[in-house]
Image 1 (cartoon, rainbow, N blue to C red):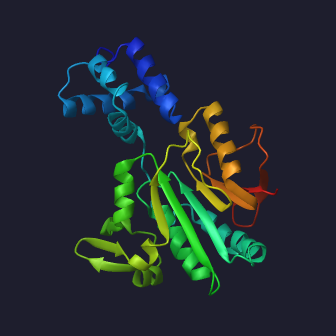
Image 2 (image 1 turned 180 degrees about the horizontal axis):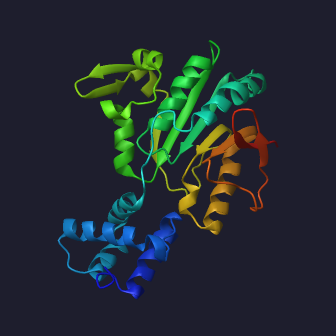
Length: 269
């Protein structure tokens, strides 16, 4: 593999991917990048990484394809149940008091992958919000393939594990080889291509989920993303990150919140 990608070429690709997405490739995960590059060269019928690099710096659409291929889209419904328990028992009761005048909850699922997380949130909000309240959910990712799966809302039988039986019966329709999310839930979610290196343009969000995404960023890119979340969020709003991720040691304005269910972060002002 070392013969396939010279160190100088690895540095070029590593810098391009980092500059465009914040995703950081180190020597330890170099083999993942090399594997994805081999696939793209085969698809493009190219011989060398240098040829492909010349295309990437001119063709933004092909660059999106490469970024899509190097992201890891591991997800499932109700992943890390403790976060959803905290949403139910702590965050939503707080927001119900704070947003009484508007009666709307705005949520961003950043790095939503194939849609299981935002659909989980949508089902929970449908169950838990009082009549007359609305949920507005934006689901974004850098993987166009994953977004298409999320927009379609069809999941094979093996992908629906973890969904409570009542939710499955109420919010899905059984189809051959899988389940289709009902339109009533689909319409509460807007799927959108977004690169976390950029400002999303969203403001006054009540809850942001960005779980198991920051681990692919180096410290500078993590801090920049966290600051953009701050700008997008309303006063007295909540941020959930992955259980293996932390803002400790990072100079941010977020407050750490520890509850009986899970730990997360709050924007107080």
